[in-house]
Length: 257
Image (cartoon, rainbow, N blue to C red; front, side, top):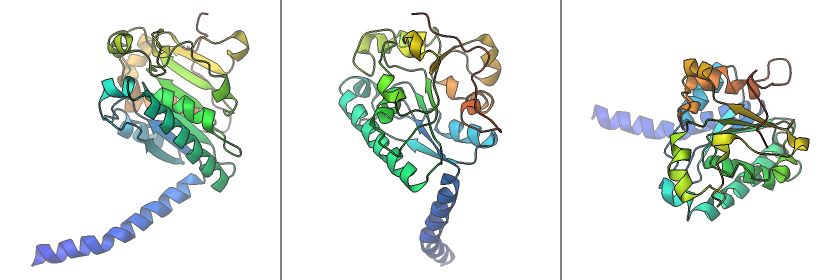
């Protein structure tokens, strides 16, 4: 009888809890929103770590996990699922536009991993006024290093930060065989950075892996760049406002052309 009564109370409280969560999210939206986009398969790498890392770094805006995989199979997402990834990017662009319309002046940022970096760039390409994106962070990107980001940059006020590592075992292995998320067999941006013309080098910041990042959990591998300490200490610099514009870490360099 007690268990039945407890279950009834929980069921009755459900709508109230949902409403409270919605109110809290709305309040945070006033300070901006950051989208996190997982890689192929949407297996959850970095979802909790990004949220915890940004929160512990003092981020006050809302944090949303954008799920785009329809298959939950990384190999399928990276190949046959490419059109769906592009479509999801367009959908996210529409959502960002609507968010900016509802919350004028609230900055939107995107952090994306692996194949999710393609979704992130396609979202930026699809944003319409009054929608804008402030900064975009690409981690272990499986998009072509030669991808043309000019259209995306038209809707980005800040910069695209590309964290890359030549030691990335996924980009060096499966992605070489399957192709990049945009359908080429170029080197992935997550291995060598984005190769952009000189005029864009102040907007696209390529940041190579360094052994100094190991203390924060990024060993140069594919997914540990989303470790909570790395998000909190390094990536948050591009998201959390501390009385001035964010800047790149000292090791940021331009990718060789």
